[in-house]
Length: 523
Image 1 (tube, rainbow, N blue to C red):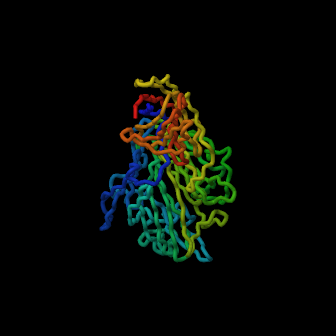
Image 2 (image 1 turned 45 degrees about the vertical axis):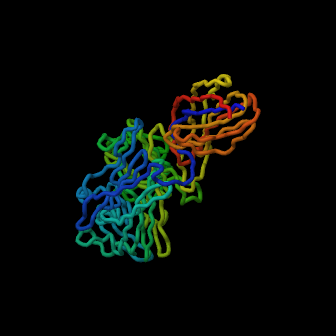
Image 3 (image 1 turned 135 degrees about the horizontal axis):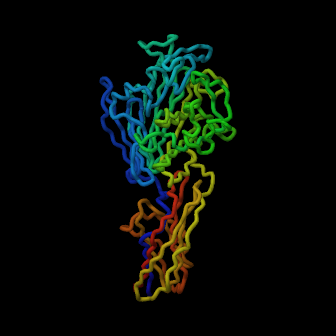
């Protein structure tokens, strides 16, 4: 009896999409972590940990838990650092702009360096006259953190820890007007975990506890230049903020307590606007907190807070967070800070979401920074991977091949196209090849793709419902085998790709050739 062999050499696919698969070693996904020295602070060594995947890398130093560099490709694949940085530890110690650091114990401002908790008033450094900013003169950005590399089946990361002593925030030897005397109450162990996955998501997980009632508000203070550091002004960057309201400020940048609508003001980024389009001699820049939109009753899930795009390079940054606010700072057109946080001066505003942490409680918050380009759409939605919608795809006409001649070998080539037209949630991309054949059938599929794909084959004699992962033309996979007089039966080769909510989808049309070789053998 003759058997038919079909070999698939190259499959048409829209972009590069990660196949769903069982948990695997991070190294198998191109993930790595390396450690190097970054100098010393006094006698304390400072290390730099670099997290990398197949697309990008993130460097974090133990001084200030600082994101020291983020190297990502543009739409043409050219890699550049998009986080403002210094090459030496000495510059971080003398510069006061908090670049890349973890700001704490209380990120943003506390009015006049004073707050009352449980009927006790506490006084802090006045380091941003007349207020306290980012924890005072010796905030978390000035500390050397302990570090441990961490990895999961899907990510690599670094865990940084620091214990903030009671009284920190009132710095001996530094002058405040009026003087401080207490600092923050409570000893507070803090953990920050930076982790990078294969889909270009940089996740920041914060946690802390306390032995006495205190207040806490942590954020990462990176400055972004998506065109690449040194590329010029960010005023032509396009920004969208998921916020209907913001907290207006007094003359010292302290919230008035109101939550005003953004409509009709330069604060309205509900639709995309360039950063500089509404700046003028009376409104010179942004350093404000926006109140993020949430569904009623939801105060904890990750929501998309901001999307920033550089039109020249095509790089895109999407910020998702479980925090109630985001501080957008335009840094005089030099860089963009997007700080996820509780509202400024919350300890003095009982109507704002609380920043109080008590013994027995755990402060926990997460922010995800998703990097891509404007020919990549990310369907990231939240930490629990809830899928809000269905991904829609359009497919070209499947390739159809001419009649098969038993005893001969023929190669038929045909190509078709597929387009991603929507990018929210999970869906399946598939291409089918109907061919009329005679006699028995043996169907093999082999692929040469950057990332694994799932495939199956079926006909009337075998439904072939099981998908199998195939990743290399060097290791062809038998998708379907059967024998019997199935004359002129329709053979369908199905190639299917599950697109998860966290996957990157490269939009556009990609034409590739699907080659099928038909031959006969006699068992």
